[in-house]
Amino acid sequence: VGAYASAYQRLFASLPLPAVVVDGNAFILEANERACELLGLSPHRALQRKSMLLYLNAEGRSRLHWRLASRKTMDTQELNRVDLILGDGYTLPFDIRITHLDTGLENSPFDSRESLLVLVDQSPGEALKYSEQRYREQTQRLGEVIWASQSGAWEWNLEDNTFSCNERWAQILGLPPAEVNPLTARRWMELVH
Image (spheres, rainbow, N blue to C red):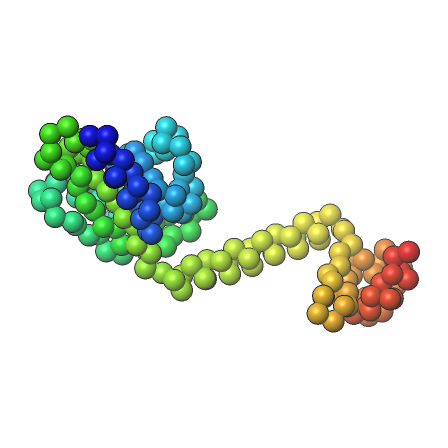
């Protein structure tokens, strides 16, 4: 059992895709590093006891629950285009490959109701849109904070060594906004010091 479990652990950890082992009720028993990153799980097994169903939309929960409960076949099953819900509520389409781990071997390290779920991202373009959306949201939030706090702010363009300032920064200096946009590094230093 020890050698078998050790070989399994090495294989599981080396999977190039996010993978989790769940019990018959879809509680996560184990997750590889890629799954921990994707789902925001702790890499420590004892802290992972979340249900995989929490990461799926209603249809996906129903489909996964049915597949785990039925276990009519030991063949790998597939759930196509299941929406995986990430930590901030954003969803991405994934395929889930389900392999039931009942080996039929005596002294197997697996409970007869455990299943391996491999998550296959179907959305390279969606991930880019998600990153761009997060960037826009963070930029908007930063702008709102600067506006609400009435802070003077500036940006330094490293390519041409110029500075752009917001209207409040110009007001603090007692200058019209047109006089401080853009500023050369030399003029910037004159105004600051």
